[in-house]
Structure formats: C-alpha cells, structure tokens
Image 1 (tube, rainbow, N blue to C red):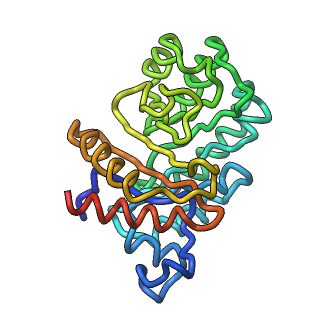
Image 2 (image 1 turned 90 degrees about the vertical axis):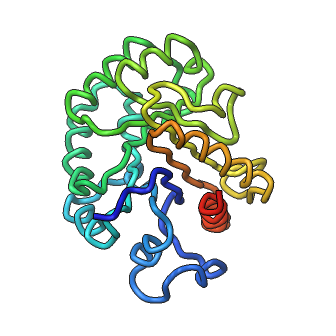
Image 3 (image 1 turned 60 degrees about the vertical axis):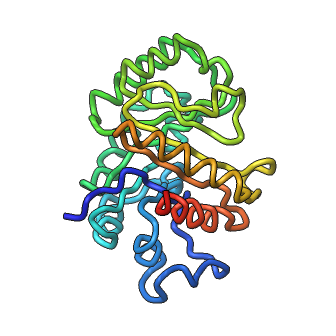
Length: 246
C-alpha cells in the first residue's frame, strides 16, 4: 500500500477547471484526474444533501490508496438543529460516509456564525458523535465565544480538532486548536471570501507552517475553499509544489 502523505493538500470539491487542466491527466472522471495529482479533497455537497453509501463507495474505488476524503457534516445537524436532537440524521450520515472505508478522513463540523458556545449542548453533541464514530473530527466554529479555554478543553476532551481558518474571526481563529492530534487549515480566500487568490508570498509562508506542523508527526490537512473563480485549484497546486521542495 502506498504510504499516506503526512500533509493532505487539496480543495473543497474536485473540480478540474480549464485554466488548470494541463496539470492533470486528460482522461478519466474529474475525481480520477484530480486524485492523480492532489492528495485529498473535502466533500462539501454532503452539507446540503445526502449521498447514498454506494456513491461514497464508488468514489473510494476511483482514487489511489493514499487519497483521503474529508466529509462535511450535514447542515441539518449544525445549522437547522444547531447540534440538538439530530441522532437520526447523524446515524444516516455516518452510515453513508463510512462507506469510504480507509479513505475516509476527518468529518468537518462547520458551525453557523450565530451559534455561540453552549457547553451543555456542545458536550452532548460531541459525546453523541463519539458514541458512533471513532475517527478524526474537526470543528470550524464561527462565533467568538468558541475561542475560549473552556471551549478548547471541551473539544480536546472529545478529541475534536479546531480548524485554523483564513480569514480569521479573531487572531486565535487563525491557529489550530482543540485536540492536538490533527491540524486542519481551511483557506476561504482573503480579502474576498470564496474568491480571492492567495499571493505567492502567502503560499510560501503557508508551506513552511504546514511543514513545521507536520514535524510533530500528526496528520496535517490544508483545504482551499476559495472556489468561486477556481483560485482554490491553483493555490493547492502551488502549495503542493512548494511542500515538495522543502
């Protein structure tokens, strides 16, 4: 089996845009072409709608052994129900996405900006999740009340890493937190979220930070979410090239 790369660099979605097509094989599905070059992808469509287990299985069968999928938890759980009373939806989602088998990476729990830190609710939700799932979990809170010592301790207790995000709500949000067994960076584009391209200087500094994080011998993920005008693909390719030169 191919050794799993320590740094999982990729995009939110496996589009192969025309302006970057020359970097990918010219045959196969978009996923097959993408997975021959980048090491990981974040499935965001699961946030909006369920996919059958056989769909996840088909995706797993089309990528190399070292490739990994992060999967975003449905918004029905995080946004509609705000982490409360979602056991049935969670069970369905886990049944579906675990069909990825060994190619399943972290589950991403992205919280709505309005959802503040409620220790009782958060503890109950992550305990429920952990009763059902022992794999990697990462949370991206977007309310400033989550960036406290109490919230960090709660995430660590449930072995949930906190996303290092750009742009960051507050300075602490730019750094990884929570459980220290996983580093997960989500780069949404800055200053224009979902659109802005990152500069070469930023990507060079990012590659250095990722390499330093990987020296701790924990999995490191770097996902570009600035997909609106396909900057994510170019940025992921750029940072991957820089990582290979370090």
